[in-house]
Length: 301
Ligand code: GDP
Image (cartoon, rainbow, N blue to C red; front, side, top):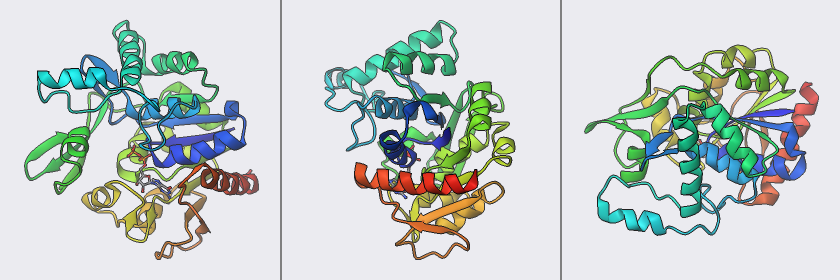
């Protein structure tokens, strides 16, 4: 059993390779929910949806969100009602959000709702939200504090970030399902997801780091040199006083990672790191990296 800590792009690209190479039943994915929000009356859990659609073979892998070939008629019709509908949601994707919202309004936890949705899509892997209480990543800019989705979707990450904050109703606690999945895994894999907005929120859930310290853990860097492969990871690392590089990422994971992987093109030297081609530009590349990572995993167990 392989367990993954995942956001919505970097780790899913690696997961695509594992899904092609290994039985889906042997994969458990702990997904960050720190960018979830109630939106248009429904519950949007962007990374859970990405992972479920990927596992179901439905994901739009050009964008790494939404259902391939989806239409946007409801989104376009909502535009006349103002700026509140700033996130583009496809019609079929919205159906998932409606179903999830109904389940949650009926009192189901996000973990149980996610299981129901995954089953409805025929997903065989275990897809687990990191926790069952609300956590929101917020950023402080010179214009004030805003939700990460507002920073990324409305401002397109163009405003300087002074601080990355987490807004919580109660300290997040990993669900019993998450702890069991991590404990039951032979190896835990931190894919190349954004360290500040995807991996850290999972690590901040009570119980996660304690389990990781007892398991073989492999981490893959999302940086090549001082730049991430995509997205705002460098700005957000700086805002957390972390060096935006593989060295900064390795430092963040140091207390529990056994093997750190960086890209063959990376100019930053991380002592003891293994080097592979980590640029997963297509499924073939994802599969190759998955086989390399599984090979390392075999040496750790
Ligand atoms: P988000 O939830 O959509 O922000 O996605 P993640 O946090 O899961 O992943 C974002 C990170 O993935 C970025 O920091 C990218 O640098 C990294 N990334 C995306 N594609 C690749 C890739 O092919 N290889 C590597 N090494 N990193 C990647």
